[in-house]
Length: 179
Image 1 (cartoon, rainbow, N blue to C red):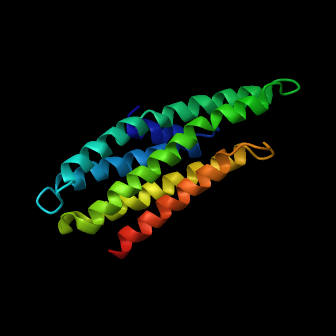
Image 2: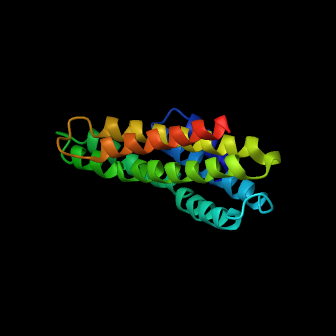
């Protein structure tokens, strides 16, 4: 979906796409910036080519997650609207798969961006920092959604794992800014 159309859908008075889709888009944008900054850092950073390739793979994994999140949340909404709400807990649990992946990718992208910010081309350092911050924001938003959707789900380790991933992404973004 073109960005303008996505923004229109995001702004509409409908519950999806929503925060999960926005988090996925933030991480996708961060990965794209990481690809660009790594590619422009070849003379400064010996591992730049590999970092660019890694960020490209992460971008390609993250890109479809905005749509996937909207679809998963659509299933949740249908379950919540059903009489007696059968399947609502299962739908909420399944809907956490996408934001979990967003948080995981966000932490990985933040690591690439922080490494480029620290040792890459100083002319694109600001872009690498922006990438780290976007990745951290996407991971944090995704972690919040996991925690919210799994409120009361005893024994599910995903909220703690998502929180850990978001904290790691935030730490890496702070390191990128401090370089």
